[in-house]
Amino acid sequence: MLRMRQICLVASDLDAVQADLSAIFGLEVCFRDPEIGRLGLHNFLMPVGNNFLEVVAPMRDGTTAERYIDRRGGDGGYMVITQCDDIMAARERVARLNVRLVADMGQGEDQGIQLHPKDVPGAIVELRQNHGADLADPPWDPAGPDWAPARRMDVVRAMVAAEIQTDDPPALAARWGEVFDRQVKTSAAHPEIALDDATIRFVPATDGRPEGLGGLDLQTVDRRRVLEAAEARGCRVSDDLVMVCGVRFRLL
Image (cartoon, rainbow, N blue to C red; front, side, top):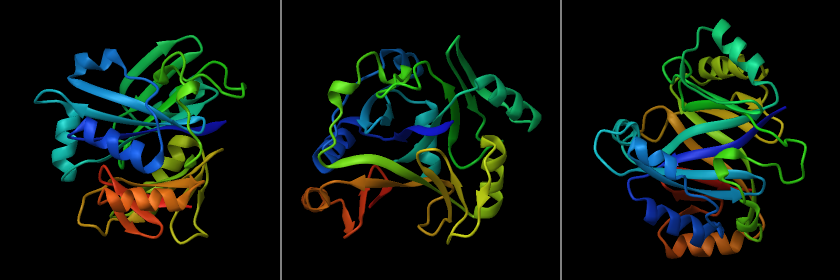
C-alpha cells in the first residue's frame, strides 16, 4: 500500500492562503500543529476526502521554508507525504539507493522518514506508516486526534494527482520510481507513477520557475462554485485551472 496521504504547500502569508482555500474549495482547518513553532513555522491542515492539504509559513527569518520560497520565487508546493504499510522496508530500500534522511520520526506503528531533497529532487518526500490504515476514516498522526468533523466534500472530494515540474521529467520520474518501488508509466503524455489513490506526474518546467511541486489535480463536486469563487478572488486561470499559493489546481 502506498497512498498520497498529504500534500504540503509553503506560503509567505498563512492567513491569506487559508482564506483562499476555504473560499474557493470549501475546505476547513482540522488541525494546527503547535510543535512546529520550534522550527520557526506555523501551519494548518485541511481534509480533502481522507487525505490532507497542509500549508506552512515562516514566522521568523532563516527558516528552511523561507529559503524554499526564495529559491522558487514565491509560494508553492513543498512536500509529498505518502503512507506506506512497511516503513522498515522503505527505510532499507532508500538506504540501498544511497538516499540520505532529513528526519527519522516516531516509533511503533507511527513512524516516518523524510528524504533529502538533493538525493530525491522535485519536492521533499516523506514516507510514513500510521496505525489504523484499514479503517474507513483512517487516523493520520500529523492531522491531529480528531480530523474527520472538519471534512467537507460538497465542493471538492479528493486530491488525485500531484505534478512535479523539472528540466528532465524522465530522469526524475525514474528516481522517484526507485524510491517508491513503483513502475514509471511512459505511455501517457508525461511520465507517471501510480500510487494506490493518486498519480505523481512529471512535467517540463515551462512557467519560468525552477524545479518543484507545481500542481495538484482535484476531483470536484461543484466546479461552478469553485470557478465563481476563484474568479472573485483573482485566482481563476481557465475553466479547469485555478492558481492558489503558487500552485496550479487542475479541476477534474
